[in-house]
Length: 428
Ligand SMILES: [Zn+2]
Image (cartoon, rainbow, N blue to C red; front, side, top):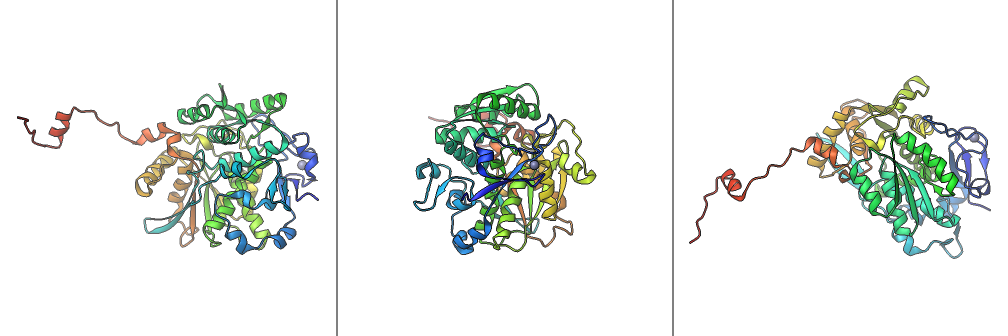
């Protein structure tokens, strides 16, 4: 018997693996819809036999698994695994070792006398959180016998897929808005991926990628569209659980663009609760940029309205968050909420993270910090164990760093000596 099945997050229909994976289906065969500038309908999620897992794996054994080695809990992954010989079909241990994520993601700080936990995913193989999804998707492609993978991306998912594919010997195709930050574009190209610059926004790149990859028979890593993107990202919840030795935070600030990271984190904690290893799921606080706040508006009004998005935080710039409904549901079920921050607040938080924490993070990651700074005196936050999720490295987007760093001045050696008022020693 298979150890997992797919379930529609919209109509609740269940599907065996063959119905979805055999013909590379991604959305619910009954109600799934991918429409222009709209959140996806019928996003699938994956469920396991949790009662069986409880008998095979106990909490103490799980907590001994090092952080960042998601393949060490194969019964909680949608991959073919032979438990007799402890092997993944068609995947060897050398390949898995190349996918090691940050093994020390938990950092502790004090901000204005408030203790704050940071979950640092900027030190993953390609320097972003997206490696969690790309790795699982790439392993699935190998098992399906497909060696070309496509994705639409604002940058990080693209550079992540490109790097992970290069590590595993696969070919990747990335559809990105032409406004992509140079650092991310060069990162994608350097890994040898094919890059297609789209004269349009992320939403346009997303739709184009779906069309082309279907035609070409490439495996698709579009976020939310491929349910393994959500499943891959759940490993962050497991790593938070492992890194805190089970003493998980009360609330987690999560940057939200398409809504897949927050849905994945919710899924991971939901499973830990289902397994009886935690009592409560941390409150998830979704942080969006003011110019890209579809989730905040959806939670307020109860309906989706499309507006083209614009923010300095390119990674969370999405007018039509593809996983909007699941993200909203995750926030509600965790008893959390969503908040928006301005680009100025994001840049200010980015500067504080660099100066006071020594962490160079990109604007999307700084959004979670900006959300925290905005609310830290609030009753809901005070005396609670708060965690910030840092999702991407700052060097991926130099322009945003240049917004608040002053231009360095050039002087001759003599001029610098005068500047420091040093006496010029004559040589004899
Ligand atoms: Zn459905």
